[in-house]
Amino acid sequence: MSRVRGSVDAKENIKGCSSSVGGFQVPIKRIIQFSPPLYRQRYNFVKNLVDQHKPKKVADLGCGNALLIQTLKCHSCIELLVGVDINKDKIGSCGLSPFFGDYLSPRELNLSIILYHGSAVERDSRLLGFDLITCIELVEHLEPRDLADFPQVVFGYLSPAMIVISTPNSEFNPLFPAVTLRDSDHKFEWNRKQFQTWASDVANLYNYSVEFTGVGEPPAGAGNVGYCTQIGVFRKIGAKATESCIAGQHDEYVYKMVSILWEVVYSISYPSLQQKEVRKYALVNEVSRQVQCLRRGYVISLKILQDDASERLSDSGLITFSGPVFTELEKTNIEKSPKPFSFGNKFYVPLERLFAYPKVNRLCDNVDTMRALIADTMKLNRDGSAVKVDLHDEYSFM
Image (cartoon, rainbow, N blue to C red; front, side):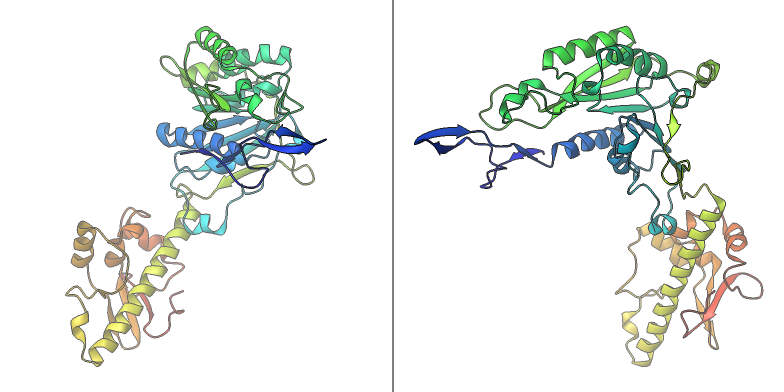
């Protein structure tokens, strides 16, 4: 649960203090600091909403440094993340590129991330058909004319299944020191009634429902000022627009893709198991890892047998003191499969044994598919029924 953090540090103390001026004690307001920080609470709110509703296509209008997009990219349900901002210099891409681990453990579904330079009040058909559009601390930056156009574009033209709008609650401002508007670029800041009136009117006009909540709870004793950030969650009433309806609208391309270096287009595609080469790489990596685990276990079992301590082996030949945790069904499937064996200085792991392991099983449909994917990378025995490695050389399998 979020909270307002108090501290002995003057910058974090929410209680009034005093200083001496001309012999008189003058009260001084201290800065309220939220824990987690208020921006993080807003992003966590969206993250939780994504966890609940599993949208596939998400756009963030006014994305700025794309921190919200960075927060959402780990959600396995999302296949397209788009950020739009009118200030090209503020658009950031730090942390959006895939890491090495994304190739070792690729996503199940494709993920593309695109950042555009453009305005939230300009129509662009590439944002049609989205499941969720977020406008986090955006509307208060709009000029009156743009604010009037905003509902027509976002609710009327783009018409996503869900819209999240957050904006400052001006009733909270007296708790801050010398605050009229929280940012010099804000054109206005609504109180709760103003925001709810505007949001309800927009929702009714464009066939949405709306629920109100917020983040950033006030400190104890602050009275009924509401959340520091007020949030409206809008949901489209009735069926979503069909693909034919969307396709029937004319293409209108306004946004420009963000130029990062030398004016190149910024677009990121994450590795996923939908891509054949990525699936092959993940399968080879997992098979190699599993073969080496089995080889080491086999070598240890031989040593234990030589030391006359065979009771430390299970009946299935698995070493009981190490290894991944399996369900009972998974254990049964593994134990029923052909066991690894050695011949001379070679160690063999039957493909059927490897296919019984859950992580390998989910990467290929059957043993024949696995054989075809790993045959040009890993050594197989003569009839192609098992992976072959040197018994005492863990680097011999490729």
